[in-house]
Length: 192
Image 1: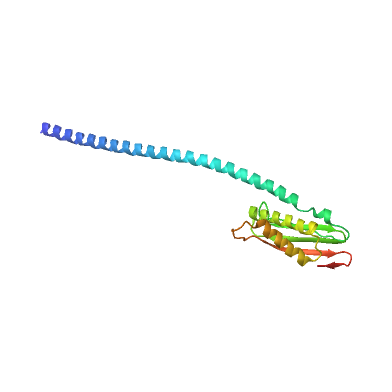
Image 2 (image 1 turned 45 degrees about the vertical axis):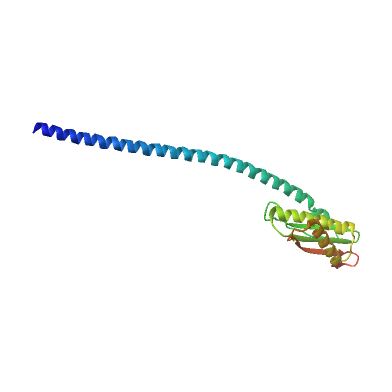
């Protein structure tokens, strides 16, 4: 009986050792797989951190560039306080939606008249700001070089200049602006 009990105890102990060995091997494989996955995650995280750093640097460069474009755009806009006189007084609130704006204003004092207005170009941000610069340059040509006195002729001439500036052959043209164009004749005290 003792021998039978010893053999039975040995078999139970051997079975227990086998189960523990198998469980330990299974745990080792699971840990190796987990370590491999952790290493892959760590590598992916390192790559993502590098990409995020590059993206942050590019974003900073773009924002810096757009902020500088704001400086250029604001320098292109007239200083309203310099255009206010005894004959024409006005105030303007200019608050762009984005850093740079597709909106602009203008004011010119010409002999016995003042030409002024506001414009809203298609698009916001950089595209709108680019169209607004085209608009400001075109208005400068229309008012300073062509010397129209009729606002209808000024707007038609402005339209022609903007289309010529933005036309690039076969590409479809979807850019433009809404504009308020005023011509104040100080001599006759008439606003067109």
